[in-house]
Length: 113
Length: 112
Image 1 (cartoon, rainbow over the protein chains, first blue to last red):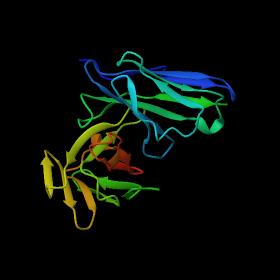
Image 2 (cartoon, rainbow over the protein chains, first blue to last red):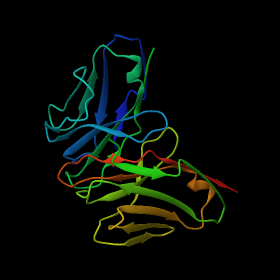
Image 3 (cartoon, each protein chain N blue to C red):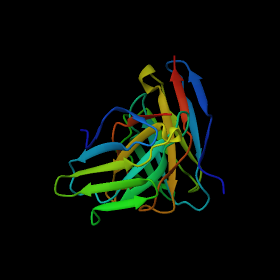
Image 4 (cartoon, one colour):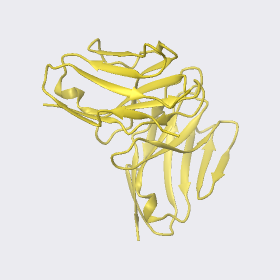
């Protein structure tokens, strides 16, 4: 079956702009996670959803970052007033439930100029 | 605060050799320890995982050794192949949080 998909695969934007990154989880997976991976580093947790609600958003760096999952499937990570330091690969993962294996998508490579 | 420390940062091994990557953790509440493999331009993929009630787990050429008292665990890749060349991440979580804490990664190069 299809894995986790993320769009766009690459995004170049200018400092101060708004961006949206989309994640389509594996069908039937109730848990969805967002991570950020800087060059040469391991992924860092941002937020996860159990169903439609954000169960833990403690990893979001500041209030410029927001994520939604309105129907319990697709999720969108939103970044306002982008900064050069936001440049990274944003990874999405999903799992059948909270304590199950997380399957990662290919990521969205965000470059803020 | 870095909760999972991984070493070495990079590793070069000859084909057929053994690759060993080590991780240490601090939080004794961690109860699941997966290893992920990542190729350039791809997302991490689960390789093998272990829970702290087991000291060793083997799947094919990949083995996790786990030392609960030392709070350390390691990945051994036997008979390393050029196709194993990738970045490897150890990770840990507590089952009720859902969030994986990753190590910094090890870039493995297996020379033919």
